[in-house]
Image (spheres, rainbow, N blue to C red):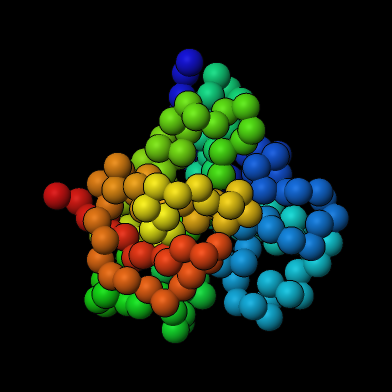
Length: 191
């Protein structure tokens, strides 16, 4: 099976729609809850959400990366400079230093492609993309589920084990507890 990870650019918006758009008129998801402030998130309803994400894909820096298996979109990872995200102002997820890190906070794999390593490949692609854009390090905020099953509605944040296998290390505890599991701040830095 041929695998490749590409930036989520305007030409790939149909694939972004496949990965993130529950329905073109949906007022949820589209991977915006951690990308924009709460007021903006609440204000983006119906088709405005998809239009906002389309505009993100038209920017010079893509809002994330897409994984392809044999030319079929199979995965998504959201990434951006932490300074551009609500994480920069979070009271639950700390800053460990003043480094201008990038964040990876959402990983999705399409049904039918799960269990084939897509999450590992799309995460590696997100790190590579962040580094290519000048990131000195990459952070994530997965759940520390200690091997327990994570509810599918909260699985998008990833698990500590996934990020550890990608070379991330725990940098700090957080006060965030989605789906009953504590989130940890993980950091990947070039050696």
